[in-house]
Length: 111
Figure 1: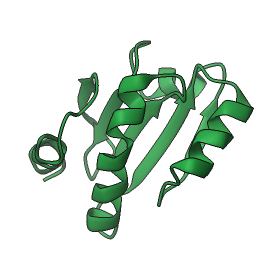
Figure 2: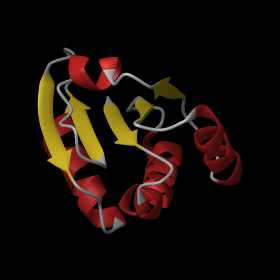
Figure 3: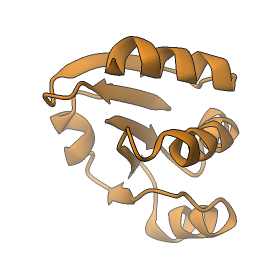
Figure 4: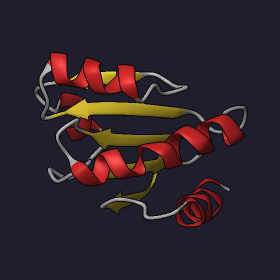
């Protein structure tokens, strides 16, 4: 599973959104993707998702309860990888800059 913590006001989050959209379409049958919108207001988050729809669910996490549960640090963006047993495999801090870096981490931590 790949969990991406994001916020609509976070410029690096916005820049990596297309990478997650593409990987979810490509790998969605083998890998579960979940978005966690934290540190954001409901309206801006909904407006952003309307303009950049995801092929996977994204949950509002106003109090960062989900983020804390998955051990995501307070900064943005954060991507958390869980292996097949649901064990935390890796926490990537910062934005992915390209498709190959995200794909490489998926192969490395989800295989």
